[in-house]
Length: 352
Image (tube, rainbow, N blue to C red; front, top):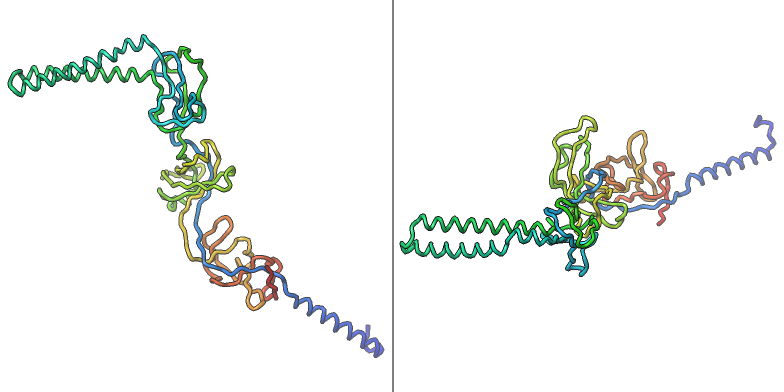
């Protein structure tokens, strides 16, 4: 269209329309974008390694009978009923007793006890006479040999008698208890009870070789399980292999987990974090607010109602947060919501 052919009225209308469009465009660019901000406060963050695995009991045993006899399951003094699956037992506590009168008679415990008492009396008498010159050294030695033999014989009888009792070798919990009719004869070597101790658990993990010089014995760990969302257990690195697997490029670590309330059970699948290092009083922000561009990583901070781009350098990270080693400082007003549509120098309106 040739502007010279326009009438004065049409020319005026065209100018008015252009002015309105320009005002509308300026109004759009002046609109403040709503954002939420948080003042940056110094915090702490850890460098960790996350790994997973299945926990095992720190001690377990399958107990068998050491001799034959008539089976009898004993009463648990803590519950007032016979021992059952899940019952706690103490080290040395008798769980099962075998009865065999013929075996008892063959041991002859009472006779051996009496022989020991006689041997002790004889030795003391000979020793008293020897001190007064009444017997020779040879006679005293003979009395001492008889005493030693009597002690050995009595102790052996006690060991044989103990084979009629199936006792817990450690503090633990009954995890298997085969059923036998009371009074039924069971043979030597019969499996009668299984125990586990899991107030402390073990976890074997494979760690990437790049951490071979970072992971140390004694470093603290945290352990989580999906069935225990509100409980985190503590522990430490107990053993480390110095060798790298050529197939997996990993090395083996063994972790000890404190489980005093028995929240975790042997066989559970858990996630663990090995704490390599911790920093305090550093700038830490949520990972989700970081924007990536061709120049690297950046965030937005608000200054006098305007959003400003800040290029940042990252340090330690955890699942949700990251340390900022450069680009931000304490008390900067960090945009945590609404940053997706921002540009450098965008006008913003702060909302809750």
